[in-house]
Length: 29
Image (cartoon, rainbow, N blue to C red; front, side, top):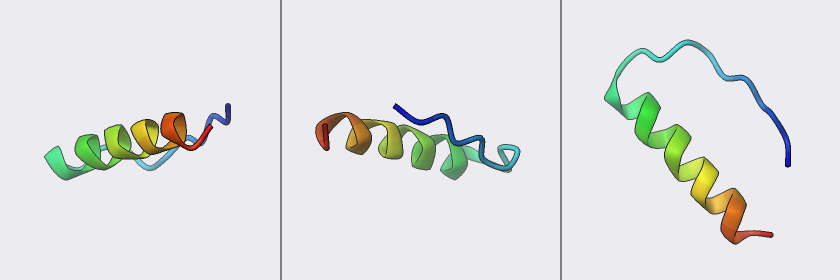
């Protein structure tokens, strides 16, 4: 796994995007 620190959350979309990226990363294993 890779820990890619992203910019500070600026809204709900940031949290959703982060969650999606995490899910995709898990499914892409």
